[in-house]
Image (cartoon, rainbow, N blue to C red; front, side, top):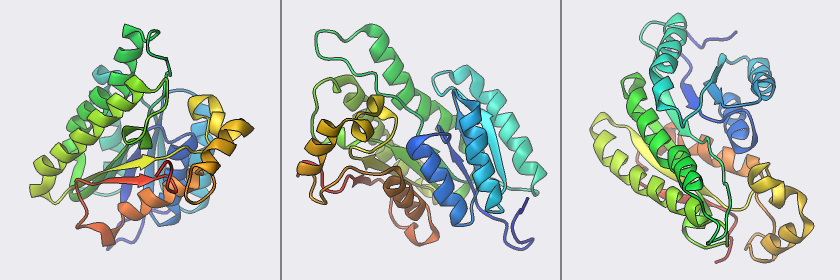
Length: 259
């Protein structure tokens, strides 16, 4: 596979949850722009292999890696695997972008929220991304980009999303603190907050339910639900070389939902 010019190796991005939905779109959009990609998955390795094949067809290097971001004990082994892969592709190669995308919703109305719901969403959307970013810090190149995937639900509300939105809110606070802590290395840290998007997320409701689609379209300035490609394009642009002066920002990518 292509490994970039010997004088200017391709940039390398790690996309967690890169086998489906928005993560898949991010991985493919990055490959289109000349990035090599490490994509992780928690389940459905066949989907990960399919994305990897699409990336390889674009002439990019790609690695798939099983990773459960709720299991911080597995991070050292994953770090060793990534380090080996990077070194095999050129001395001194590091990660130029980290996209903390992996997640789930686990909706529950107030009165039916369980401790397990809270623990799962905390591990997925705050504890896991924080500890993973910390573990990967030695592998991040100076001047790297970090993007944390948040949600428009930190700005507006929807019944059943209390815990999910609260954890995404914590992720946004983490984003600002990481921007401060990592700024001396020239590393930018931003949050991208998708609006309702047509993926498997939330049981595929935005993609499959006509009533949900109609509601979203009627309450969105641009008149439709989002597509995964809308989010992938934003993330790919944000980690590009022209955005070295954007950090500690929350960028909502929702077409103007519930303005």
